[in-house]
Length: 345
Image 1 (cartoon, one colour):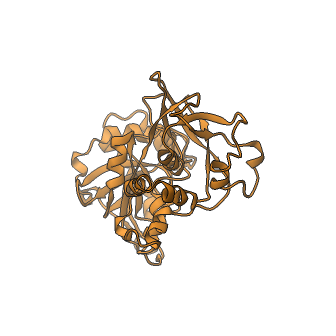
Image 2 (cartoon, one colour):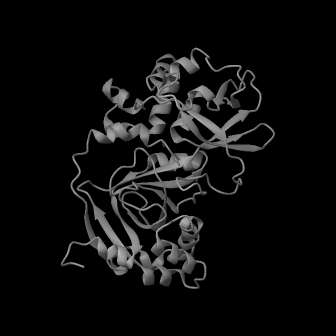
Image 3 (cartoon, helix red, strand yellow):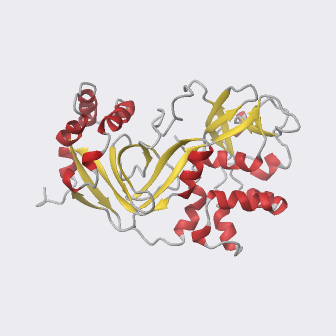
């Protein structure tokens, strides 16, 4: 599971501007209602769907997954067996982006690589709360215990790697190791974006991951204290068995796909379901994606986080994204119509 994303940094900021949610409503649409449906690459969407549909237990989904393995016309598959459903809960739609960070590191510490990624200590498992971020980093409480997986050269990027929950580390010899979420210290996350707004340094609409990184680097002493304002600390595990040419593991414990995977709120959207995205704003997106991930900042029927890939370029693109639009969930036909009130089915 992807337990935290950089979007968590903005979760509290977004909460400042959102109201209470209403009871969800459901509207079954036609494929002709979907902007750009005719021109999408349905084969790419079908390949992503196949990657996780085998893990969907309900019989109707399992049957469709079996059919998907023998499809010659991907667009016809979706149009024949699904109906797009618009689910709304009174909140405006919001699309953000996430990515897999890539840091520089070493398997041995030196003057450059000084900041460790720790595996979870045995005594932290099952504990309601373990040491705080400050105690671990400032006090060096875990140093020298053999829990270090790798050392990196940038404490700010390490902080955001923890927020993201997974990433890659490039070694000096060109090799790459991939790390995933291994547990946490049990302390609640405190948004440092919200703290910057509270201090009057930025307005809510100005806060982004890159803005926070730049401020911390310009103000190293205050910046370190800002990072320690968040007591939550994430431990890692090595997941290098996932091939380098594939995406990181998502909430379904399968590799996710660049610009075809979307993180959703599973209380509204079944994990593994196709989702039609109509993102407005700069560089509109009209694309069939698959709901293969979740995130603690992704709450609501029209809230989604688009996976942009790995590395700095993907991170910059993901960090700029905060746009309106709408998304429709493609559900098996009988399941879609069962959501409608009596008399509309």
